[in-house]
Length: 248
Image (tube, rainbow, N blue to C red; front, side, top):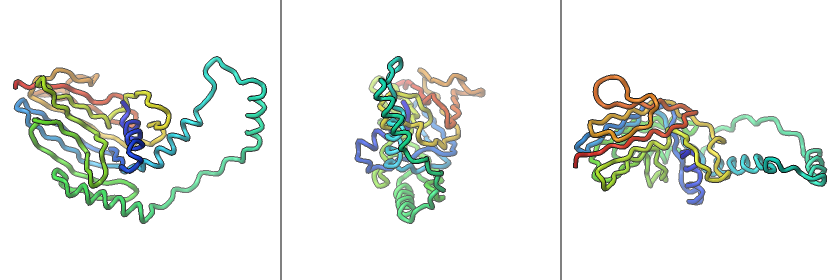
């Protein structure tokens, strides 16, 4: 499933009240031990997206892409009307220069940074300007329950990039939805391709528990132990996924 598509649909369902955080350049790791202890890290850039403008662009792209079904032609009246509309339409305007970051947007971004910095796990949060942060995050704990990142109510960030889902059958599933774009058709109102992706990095998963499955086509990384490394780019399709089983 596409992270961006999921994010925009979720934001729409919440009347666009949430903020959307997206990966930039990063290095991320997750270690899960057979005793259920884990450590997750994310060091790098975080991009703050505007859900309102993203949804608006998605709607425009969806309408622009509407066309008669394959094999179905327009009748003569439709052709005449379409040509008349084209003739009457004004010439496209030249692309506007990028707008300077507004004071309101800067204050909103700083509020997000402050909210994140108060959460356990964030060793540093720095706003760099132009909707971009640099963060250093590390969390160690026990998988007696599920874990998601990043979710912060004060920052109104509710859409996770990565989830570790702990199940009753002694397994845990790792799903890094923000690091890939395995697409599902959820409607044209939230097209992820209309938004630029700046993600670029690596996600490394290690474990000494039983590895039930993982979806990296390159298989295990060389070296001792169980280690899987996914290379994440703006065009990555595969959502990093793995399942481990604990002894108890």
